[in-house]
Image 1 (cartoon, rainbow, N blue to C red):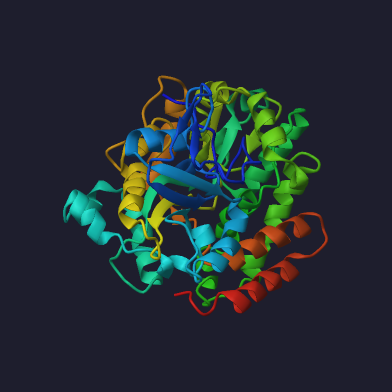
Image 2 (cartoon, rainbow, N blue to C red):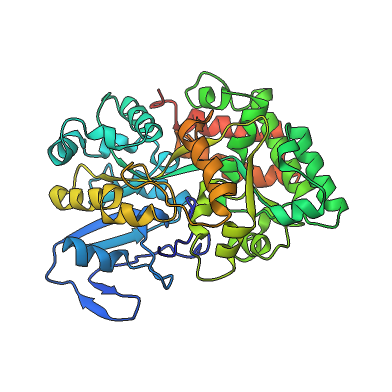
Length: 446
């Protein structure tokens, strides 16, 4: 099994600074050997630093470019931009026909750009037969169908899902819970959840390790809005409810409560790579809501920071009471319609979503291609993390993690710190998100 640095997907946890061109004419292997690729056909892939845009070897090095050369005979140029900045880049490039050959994407960045992607049904049918969809998990198929409806072509696939993700589940330190006399099974309501924070703090144990990563802020808000306004957030994204509605806006106050009453001082400005995860791994904090659920699978074989020991032997999980697990494709791969290299791009897409890369990914986290199920480790991880999270991903009362418009996503990550720090109130935050929706989203949401 190889090392996997979690990404929010890990929208990058341990490698948050990654964000430039990662590969081009030369591939550098984990041992430092350089392989010339000038004689290989080139495919350009854009994305953000997440599972499907990286391939980590046993030394913790990203060798995606090298593996593409060795296994596909393709010079894969990977251009990574932080997730919250990718939407603007696509907005400028795709309509102008200046995009890549392959795009790694998910709901949170795509906005109205699905129509710029190549339909994939014909490719998939030729590759796997008419029943090709049976190879994918039900949650992945539901999301592919949703995308097809948004794009106005029901039944067509515009991307193939890579890894699957379940959010909204607290990760906690079982040893610290025992020290504080806490039983996770007894936390049955949001009020119990807040009370658990107080019980930990009274025992001298910091309750939460939290940070400021934009994707994490939106994930937490989406988890909590299902408590204050069940089902309404999705309607607001379709223009059938308002982000400034009192019940939706109330989730801003819950988000502020978690940060201000449960998390460490200055959490809203903390870096997750240098503060949050080390705090959890070292037993300095009892819980985290940062990239919760299945993204923590990626620490299974961490070669540094103690992540492997924590998730294998000390971590447990429970769903935020009153919310729903947020299940979705974290990273899918697609072909850009204007690409001149569609056949080669397809080789990359199927390699990542259903080929050798998917098989490697499945060694440590869930993937949509059902031939590669997550593997047991023989540690406590199997019982306390993997079993409940995979069951919830497959059969639980889940809700898709969907932010249909990138403008809404960007507005949320902007206003949440203001609410947490008392600079604006929840009602004003809701109005600002609604304004972003009105200006940028109404023309295309279903």
